[in-house]
Length: 240
Image 1 (tube, rainbow, N blue to C red):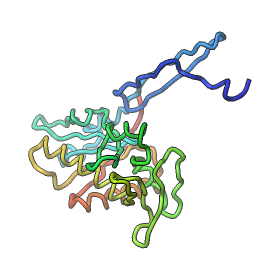
Image 2 (spheres, one colour; image 1 turned 30 degrees about the vertical axis):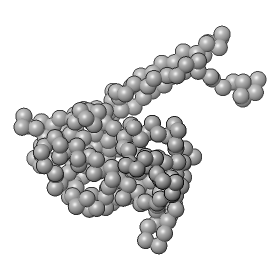
Image 3 (cartoon, rainbow, N blue to C red; image 1 turned 45 degrees about the vertical axis):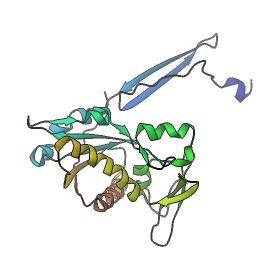
């Protein structure tokens, strides 16, 4: 049997759950070559309990943006002295950090992610991952349809197709600033005014040096938006 013959071909598309911070997919094949696919999700308990774990938040009462994998969550402090996740940003499960440039006005989140199916070269993502890498040693992932380049002023640029039949390049910090602007708009809509300071949290999947580079990139993005940011940290992250 060749490799091609041994590949599993699904008889119908599988819908993945929208709720859950992580998704586990288990595939088993019996002696009759019939597959069984089990899909389950896992939650990051640190996100569920972040306001109690990060005591600094209860003092500052700042709008909160948490990053995990290629997603983010938004929460704001309420008069009831607790934080609530924004439903318009998919609650505690958050939204995808994708930007697509296939239309005149950029698209963000899940809508942009869906564009990968038909126009992958117009979509950028993995911004935190790229920020975590040394600028002189970017490890290109084979699933990226954008390319990595640089110029005299920017050691790292993402080059992608853009509406109108042209190519454009932008730094990871600039693209992150575009995305943070969407977060800020959501926060402003919820609290009635534009925040001047926000709290940022990064899920513990990066080592210390990578975290330092990510924080530098996020700080640069916030400076572009003229917003001050503080970082909250916790060593207690786990899944349920």
